[in-house]
Length: 298
Image (cartoon, rainbow, N blue to C red):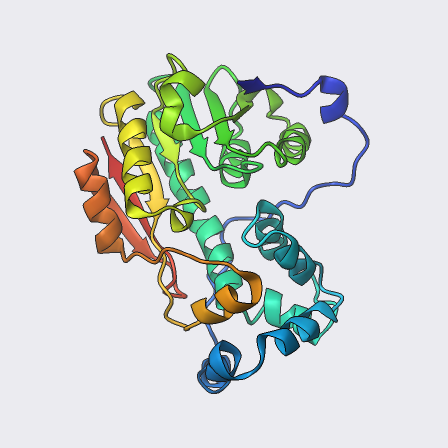
């Protein structure tokens, strides 16, 4: 189902949605002192300190990020807060925004993936009108940033942003309006594994699959990739990623927030991609060592 938002809603007076100043900020790494602190503290957070005590401590913070993570772990709003990285409200908020390895890695991933999308779009731009599909897209932050930075219009590109949940669509519509690219952006609620019925006759040149694969098991991921492969144009590009836990934060996220990630190395993601019919063209490991980012071709 195509989800359209009336123009009056997209152009209503709302606070400006944050956008990064540029895409050339230094990528983040973990300072040595924080690495050392993590080695000492993580075993206590993961296994020793009572979960009920840790929960009460975190809920005592004024952190909007922590409050949202308790409400909906891993949701698009938590990602938006980590991307924006505002001034922390207190020490616990600083831990969540600045000292949390996943927050740092997610900001790295945003910057890297957006640049990859820009490069892919540019490679097609002179020869054809581009169709881009974002899967599990939320408000479409990566895609919208890439399109706006390239100053493209609806005659040059159309992006279809699919998600099972439509609660990010209003925010995404307002972001598109703020960027002046509303005519390029289409939000659709549905299961991308049934993409041929969700988006009949759409043949994407580029597919972005970021922020979803860590919540899928291998069979679910293979089914999704197979469905996407079937509708892409020959030679089309797909951008996705794996996830690792070099900072040993997974037990804490599970016992406090109930957040469970399916970890995969770049090689493991590559095997599933190749099984679904893709060929790997590039792989980048962001500096935190959490997200191997892969580009593959049909």
